[in-house]
Length: 141
Picture 1 (cartoon, rainbow, N blue to C red):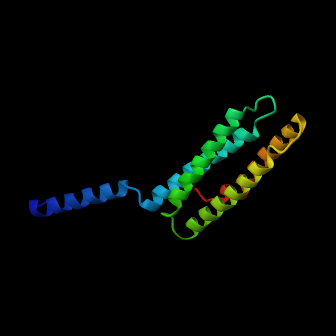
Picture 2 (spheres, rainbow, N blue to C red):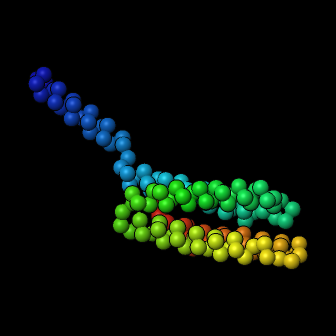
Picture 3 (cartoon, helix red, strand yellow):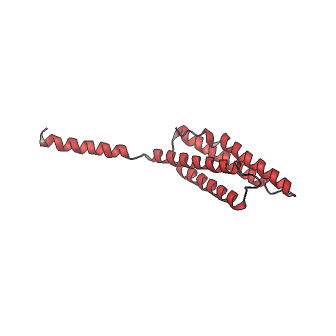
């Protein structure tokens, strides 16, 4: 190969190789959404697995804080998504947030310990259902 041709060809190949390594804003946003979605699923599963003997206020609060943080990450990233993906994530975020607020508003209105246990069990089951109805449908493949 002649030196005049080799240098531009090597430069072009290097640029293409480096360009292939970087993710687009949309790829990064999708990755952030999917990572947060996976953590929400983990937190919901942990909450659903709690029993009256294993539940602690700190444990529930930590999981709810993690879910809130994940929702913030999703809201921050959704602007970099396009088309149907953006709409799907926006709808899921809106639906899940609304359901979580509704569930949170219904817990703690009991007058006895047994009612509180029943409310908590029901609320955690509802949280799992809310996740399935919203974020489980977000495409992360």
